[in-house]
Length: 72
Image (cartoon, rainbow, N blue to C red; front, side, top):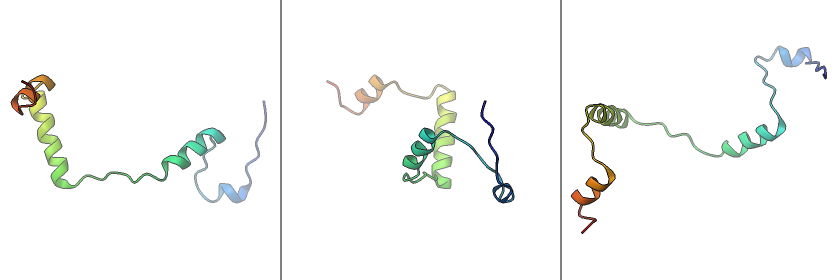
């Protein structure tokens, strides 16, 4: 087993996380993506949709395509 010494200078800067280099590089690739932050209206619409779904008020894919006229 290897011992790691963490310099006091780093310890005074707050939390410290150690991860494998491969995971760090993967995180750097994800960093370029912008996080989606929903608006209040979008959050309300999602809550309504979840409520309707829990009450069984939903359509299957087949039912939806029929109602929209995509199938003959």
